[in-house]
Image (cartoon, rainbow, N blue to C red; front, side, top):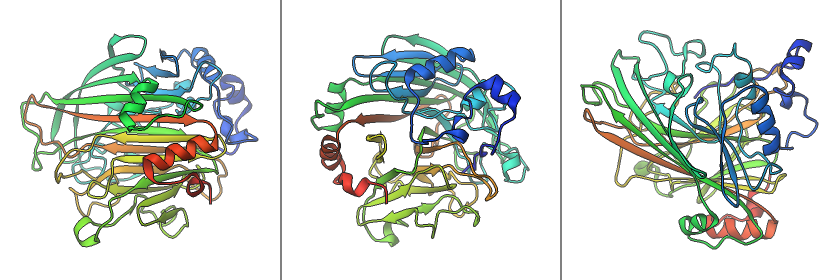
Length: 415
């Protein structure tokens, strides 16, 4: 699990003049106050960032072909609506920043794994697994993707790339991705519930595909890959995430939750940030403490929920779970004890990297992963993730939450 760089405690006058509100978190008087979509559009225009819009009657999505077809953010309504995703404005605005080593963020972005294990694609062959040596592959950091089709509510992208894992095995891949807005009717059908009329809705999905264009088959011996989708969102002191899990004996299903930050200076365990109930894991996401939790495929129910009490925002992330028992590649490169028992779901909370630093980028992320892909040459695999945002009254949000997860709004409130 990557530890993301924290914001500096102060900024030089030159940086303030040249970048305006790039590091707005460090000086915000109300950390829970969200930018509007209109402010996002102004920022993206000011710094000539390639961004496009998907729009329907209920919502809009901002995306960028240059930044790997990632969804930057979304909103329930027009330009006055709150911006619900988080992306790294500083990295995109300052051209001297390297996206291979700096986190770009975005509300829905394509990633390839594994990050951990001796077949990691984030480290060069022979390199020590350390923060200084970790590099995001170009296909998910610096390589612009080709926009191959777009409509008012849908956009398709593709890219080709090559890379080598830490074992020295080479991969040639073609990646394809389609993002699409979902209507209120779509949301109701997918979730199987009636959406209260007074709730504002922003929902979209990404269909992600990877093809083995190498001459060699992918295998455990040669090296395998997987597809992941990461969504980064705005953190504040009232945000909690909830991961429903499959109950059962640990001897058959393994641990309920994993600590995905193993450094004792930052780790998640014994911090009071994680609570395990009989059927869900609650994890605090305030952007104030580097920490992370993972859920295995054997425990996953295919859903993560977060609630931002300050902004009356309920967010649901779903992915399509494959049937049967499947191997999963490791995410955290700090623990490689079982290279085929990785996470299906991972939640990360950002925070300062030192006790002497008081500010950090206020975000948390939710990632879902496909199983390990042992693809023959020329074969492909898909991974689908859906994101739903609901804003409205406590009554309507509570009704929706309980119907979908069995978790009440009272349980979701900050504790």
